[in-house]
Image (cartoon, rainbow, N blue to C red; front, side, top):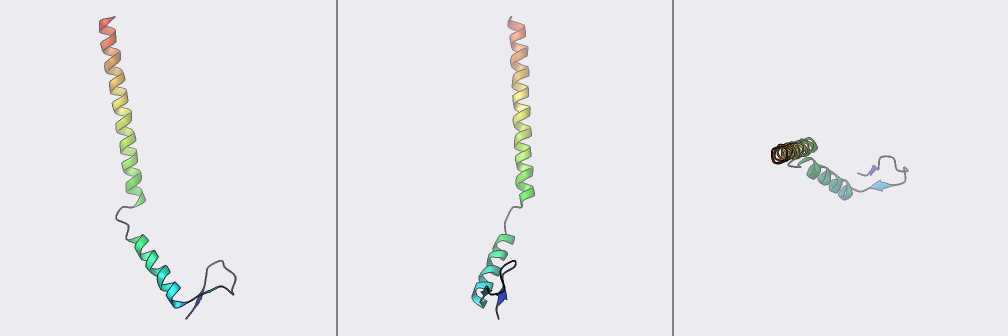
Length: 69
């Protein structure tokens, strides 16, 4: 049994082995241990921590310099 590729001309066909390889690749992609939303969540957490650390350090240095000078 052969299938046409989506969006490809009708003369382009895949054999059973190629279809099995595509299905296997799709399953491998679905088995990803982390989804994109978790990666984004972690990235936002890192950005928030970095912003908080920078702000804290700036406030600390400003306070220290105001006491010295």
